[in-house]
Length: 197
Ligand SMILES: [Fe+2]
Ligand SMILES: [Fe+2]
Image (cartoon, rainbow, N blue to C red; front, side, top):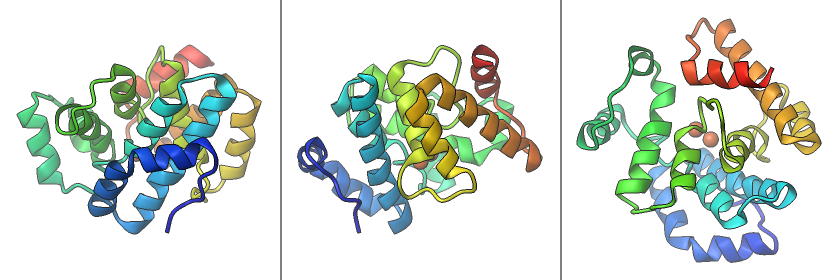
């Protein structure tokens, strides 16, 4: 099952069909659908906010490429490409796929575009000084059509009001959620938050 693409989305979906096939093999059905839905939403936001639409589509499509990758394979990617995790990162498995995913698309898929790599790299934690594309991917992950968490509709409204407004809402949501679950908040997330409030 795939989300319905329109106009430019149909063309980009065809152009990157090899990546779609790769994702279908690497991800659960739910995550595969999510990846396409984020690509679609990232494209929409790029059109709305004047970002590069093709980069947005591609970064959205690939952002969770390592999300269903087993721990040992992700550790292997880290060691092969010299990624050293902080103590917090080591204990927060949910953060790994952003780092391993960025590494994977750069070194294995040979994607050389620094904007795309960094949008994948920071899609989970965010960071201070984010680019337009990084913000779009971070937010599309919250507002894609498959997401049904409590507050998703409010976040969809926020993203149509403005990117800065939505970033603030999304960061507050993330930090509250982590605190409620008793999980640590990554320094990059705190820095993003401090910059925007
Ligand atoms: Fe993710
Ligand atoms: Fe995602």
